[in-house]
Image (cartoon, rainbow, N blue to C red; front, side):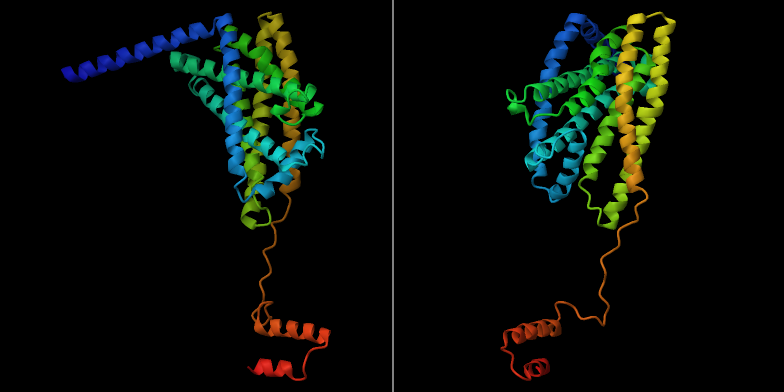
Length: 354
């Protein structure tokens, strides 16, 4: 009994100490000056990690048999975002973009996992450690948005000076990714986690969007590796298209609209005009991005779901002569000899009897 009591006492003491450590870290992270300094350092670290992971993925993709199948599909996707045919002519450029998407999908899924406890169990039930995970996930997502916005802007408007970052990015890509997608995170993440950290709608919006982005784009990358000429891969491709439509419709449609309206109503009821205008600004831009993603998913579903499965390769009948049979090869050889005028009378009969 004494041993068990001592063990319980140690466990409780350790839990209290961990909770106090987490609470102390949260206190530091929610100091505006410390928050900004931490964000700057985290943005640099995030960019370095993503670029490192991207280069490792490039070496791995270059050794895969499906690389040749992926490139035309990824090239078409890049052209849909405004890249020209000349910009996507080099296969290395296409592979670079593909691997970058895979890397940021991993980052999105990791950040959504950090946000998941407050979504599943609520703010009050999570305790200091759950709160710390929430702050880490929110600031980690913001750090990526800062890094990605900066590298896209440099490659769009100063491509000659920053060739080391990659090929020039089109203005259309800058508008979609930076203006529509990243503005919500860049302008509202820090104010929201400082003044409304326990707001459930905030937790649901952040987690659902990160989960949708990470999972759908990662499924899309896997989809590009499939050989739709085979029945199995064709059915998997259609399944992924349907799953992407369901995820995007649920998160970027149903969840986004409902939770965003709830947040805006809260700002309005409390008379918080700066947050209301900021929410409207970021919400409208993000709604445009979500609409583009939803339309793309619907278009893919309309294209692929009605398609019939590919026909299997025709199997030769038993009485048909194979292209590799001795008789076929003999006749083909005889025709070549006759064409050259070198065939002897009765040669085919002699050979066949042998």
